[in-house]
Length: 544
Image (cartoon, rainbow, N blue to C red; front, side):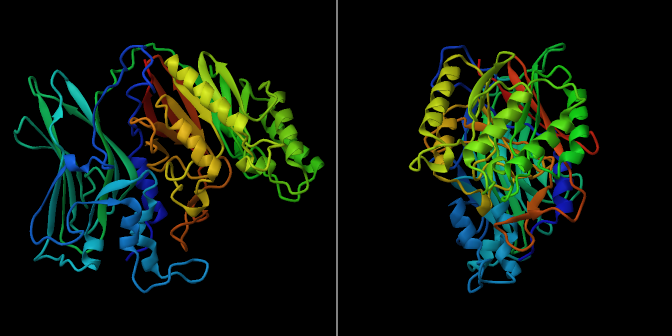
């Protein structure tokens, strides 16, 4: 089995996928009576408890894992693990390259049950896959009602490794008619995958609906004659597209950056200039944690000086009010108490206009609700991860309130949740007890855009943002976005498939975001600070 995808390859693939749109909230949580959404979900085709709606046809002899298979994500990983090979990075060094699962584990946006066409696992389980016994398998949706629609969007999560001569196809057929190809993955550069891999990607395909058509059947076909590699699909949605943005529409805008630390200070001036250029009328600068480096032996004088260094980098720039979230580097000194460090954070925040008295708070900025979460000082020992019960109650109450008002809400927290955005498949990002509780609350509300830092993974990647559906949460999920970092960049570890490492084999790509909240949608754009170029964009429908 091969090693992880080379970093240069995933950068090229991600760059080719710039301007990818994400699936969005089709309705507000609980239904608030504020009218129909600007974007309507027509059908959800995820595989958790609903895979019976799909049909599978595989040519040739039947065998386990040969052709499209419905499987729990973790069962898929276990099936791909090599037998008789030690893959524990704490005890088995160096790790055998077969432990790297050919990048299967990098499907960050996957949860629960997936549909997988995996010739590598099929061959390992005894299936014969070669030129005389190729795999040709089709996964077909039921008829999706499209009557009266001029166009729909097919949205799905896609994790694809390009095997030699393998072909993945997505087609549509209306009312039992001929199939029309919508997307093709292959080794050809003109294919949608650019001839390479699609790592934890999101595909959004606009499909024009013929006049008088009533139903559409979508098919995912996979053909390969090699006993290797795979295509995994999850979270299939058919929805109506948003209309074109009206000319002259004026949004409420925000600037966003995170993880300055010490390493990011040289990029801070350029980042602020770029944000000023792209969002000159911004109502706020959202600073998503790790303002300082915060060495573990840092004294009060040293911590205050680090904040002063950041303030010096801010000086001379025309900034809107700064609304920061507290990060782990902001409170990791073993010399200072948590209370002292929180006080230093608050002093910095208020110096730049936040006007807050604790690390979790609410602001309504230009009519847009902003909720900021973070670690606290003085939290009782039975309240975990330094997040108090009071903070959970605050989050619960405020999200419920804004749902009744039909408002898109920006939620800032330095830490991401596991299995959401880039890199969060890794062991380092496993949820703690409070993380599960916080995400369970957030997951009830599709009108939440959750902005996190901490990972330092680049927004060049396809899974820099994701729609996340939580167990027991709203069926449309919430939107999670990785804000990138100004400090050093991280990427998959070359030594451990469940870890990460600094991306030292190529120039760093410090990144910033802008958020533009329009009447019917929110547009988030990511920019490379070194080049000044936009590298990605998502569009999220607002509740209406």
